[in-house]
Image (cartoon, rainbow, N blue to C red):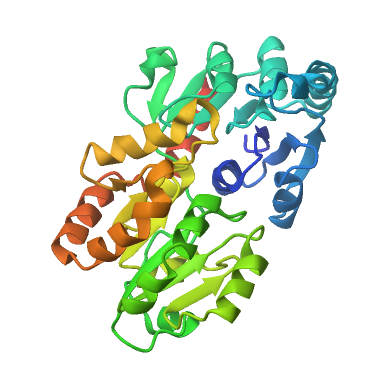
Length: 367
């Protein structure tokens, strides 16, 4: 029987959406007759990205809980109640065989409803420090697919399966410095290349660190590919038009990360779980600057799990503007150190993550 029905739920950021799509694609490959329905949060990124990838999505009026500013939670309870009622309608109307949660608060209502109706649920926890929603959902989940060691701190050990995180397609086989990649980024020499990437929306600290170091970059013999993110691009472009730096390649968004990784000798990045999985896959020597604005400071936990294995360098967000670019320009010239980081991070890659998660789901279906 291949005409199974699956609900995949979660989202809020690209870090949740890419793995969700990878899992859905994996299910479709394994069960070509299956039906897949996504459930996300109204007004969030997934409501646009999922239909663009060819899948149907339903949005819930759910919102996140603000720990810092309690007054912002006035609408939280009414939205949660509405989301639970909507989730019940969706589950009863669609009749899924299994519901898969990839994190993000959108997955809360739908997985709770599914579990209460006796439908098996599977969690995919991407981070090394589990979020509140997943810790609650883990109590009723049949299996929890994780990407880091020591996750028994958060979940029942007998439910945990180590699979790693799925990554977006096209990064499985990166060929260093291809002619196509060099042409795309207008690189005509054999200069070293640093890639600075702060996600699709951008990372203020990384952008401020770059702006504070323009003179240092201008004097260096290193090309920097700088993805600013859409919130910051125009203002930064204006500054660089007034004060050009010939060895910077400025981009709002990089559409082809495979080409960017292929020319990069060093990557500077935040430490989201999805990004780290990509860096492992492409064996990138990297400097990680964990975002301080995330729940439970999970990006620092993610980064430290690499730093402890000598697989990445960590620069604190608070120190980045002063130190980051100077450290990066020094490190990229230490070729042996970069090679060691690259070899160590490569060992942590999980190229079969999607297949392994699909296998967990297939086993539950058999049982």
